[in-house]
Length: 177
Image (tube, rainbow, N blue to C red; front, side, top):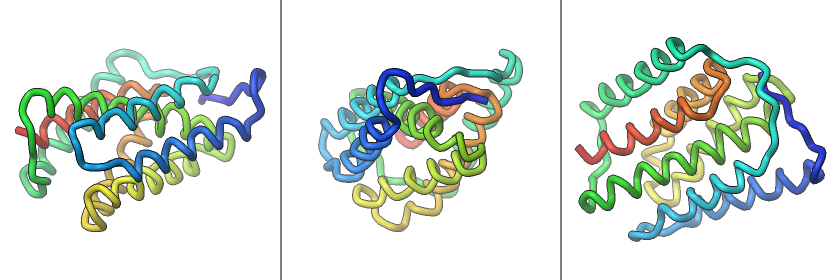
């Protein structure tokens, strides 16, 4: 399990930074530069120090990540959002996904994990779903909440934010296929 190490700045500073990043993410527009907000939020998430006490081996990480990507590929056949753009949109969608996962499963997860993995998974999932409402509407809350739970579980199961980041980036790219 990861634990927060608050030696350089008070916890309130990190909570405020992550909260402001989430608000900025929710307020982003639907333009060609909307990917910059999650990337910036991800940079905020990287500033939160953590000591990782448990990590999955490479075989487990790969299995957990591939399983998540396959779940999104299956979901894609039932529910899609209209894609837009070309190759640039694919790259921007992948970059935004990684930024969001750094913010939510690296930064916010670490802040909430002090109250247990269940709180960290639930808290990051709810905020993840809610920040997508302004951009996509309330119709995506269910799928985004489910995605957030999957990403949170991947974070817990692997001990790393990288598995949900790869899964989220793949999910965003699959959306455009």
